[in-house]
Length: 601
Image (cartoon, rainbow, N blue to C red; front, top):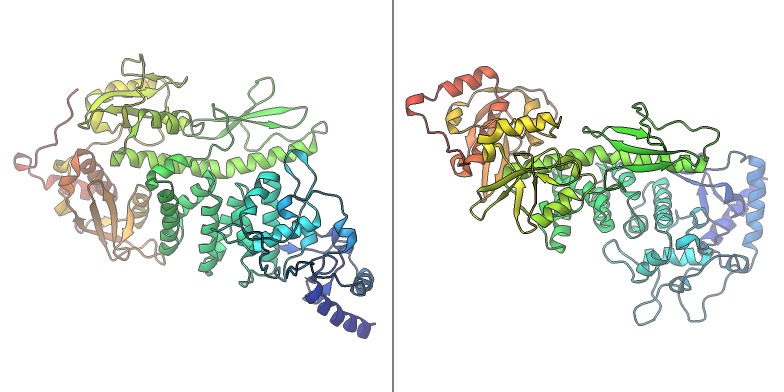
């Protein structure tokens, strides 16, 4: 029997190399013995994150029978080449498969062609691809699924495409087929590539994700990046895939990588990819970040409905973006960490879909809110401005960002940069001034996040208003400390001890490590850079190693009152209370630098 199987395996492998049929495909069992499985037996196979797996009922007897069935497939006539001489690989081109019910798009009726109609030379599909194991791809609006021939031709389209250069027919496929199914189809191809240990010879899997992937692809792909750190080319290609998908969520993940990737090289690479996308749209990176904040399918009030069939639950979020629920009658349920449990009366399929929706929502929402909060705080510090129309679009009408917007104080500015009116957002998306009266925003006005320096004289009044409405600010604003050069002698901070953890805190406030991790740097308007030096230097191998400040470099006095206040605030945050008092007392009051003037009004 073993001799027979060995002989038949040699015949089957040779046939697989030439036929590449749906009925035959090489498959690796857990004991690493290679078998060829017929399509009928592979119906029980399913793609999984760890690769393809055999049915639970598989046995040596069944395997022997399957080999016999596959052997019969070898004896069937070989498919003939196309009449037009195309060197296209006819995988599984038997009459039964061709007559299988399904849909065939015009662009998938044959092998890929050039713009002039001539056939393209299609490379062989990779060894690791198992076409029958790929999920069905139905047309939009519940149409029939693509036939096996159409699926084969779709894979051929991917084979002749590149991440940044899709074959034109891919656009027609995306327009005709169900988007979610296409994304699942691409991910199944990726899982087969993953199960084969990522062979570098073919890029078809990554091309499939780039051209057919959607928001469901993004978190699954980026979650693999940390494990790919030792294979930089794979991470680089993955970033290219995110840029090619190009959705708000994909670009948000790319933006997150540019700030939080483990290595400097990956952060710079993500930043470059993001800058390329911004340049292609005629925007600055910060402007692009405003436009790509995902709404996660929330309604205008930041809520979403989860359907269990006979029961429906509305999920909303409080000031800290913790979820809370109401039932279909509007009754608020007790705060729960998880979704309500399924009952016997609920629709199981709807419950599973609701849970998937909730998981997708909560996985990224908290990180996105944190990033937007930091971006808005940085906009306050650096003095970014928007038109009234942009402000309403990015900060008022957006269902997620609005929950941050209404908890902050904003202002309009004149052409000299002076404050005209400070205002806040009311619960009904109108605006109120310091007298708590309704105020109308001109779409052509210049709007920015108000820094305490802009409303210092009215801080007590605004603090009272925010307290009366029980508003919890996402970052210190109304109560933020104000400083001037008179509050700290930057020349006397050298030698002050610093906890390494505090250095990381500043990296979340817009600073970055520089000079071989021996300084913190921050860019300011006017092409100015301020550096806070320290020694012996931060090391990832010794994150708790004590540091000592080496001084502040850069023209701090040229930053303007807001910039000066923020630099002094950040330097003071690094120092202990004892050293802060010492540096403050070093300034002799009679001859100290004068405090910066406060704005009038």
